[in-house]
Length: 117
Image 1: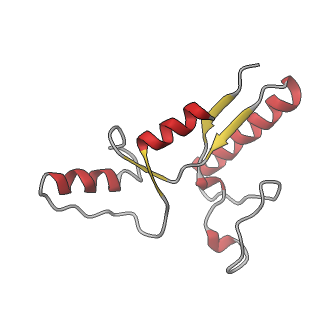
Image 2 (image 1 turned 60 degrees about the horizontal axis):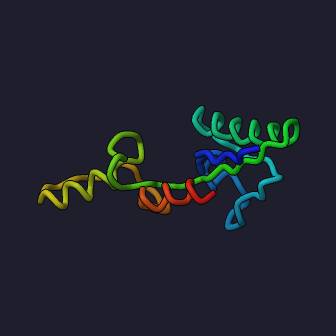
């Protein structure tokens, strides 16, 4: 069978505040607590990947990139960093409306990860 790689999301975990204070995020075998329909949907996709392996032997890997920035990433909730870079290049101001901490991944790097997975 041809292996499949697909995009999941850190949203499957839900907010870190839902887990032990200062503790690590849960292991993959442990219960996850997504708090959005998006996170629940992505967790469902990961479950489907597991069942396809179980029932049909089709291998897959779900990648969970955090905030992706770069060309082609100008829409969506986490597109602010891309818009901010574009604004800086054009000499314009821009306010990123999403707050909190995250990891940033350049779109070309993420594309390469999917190809190589």
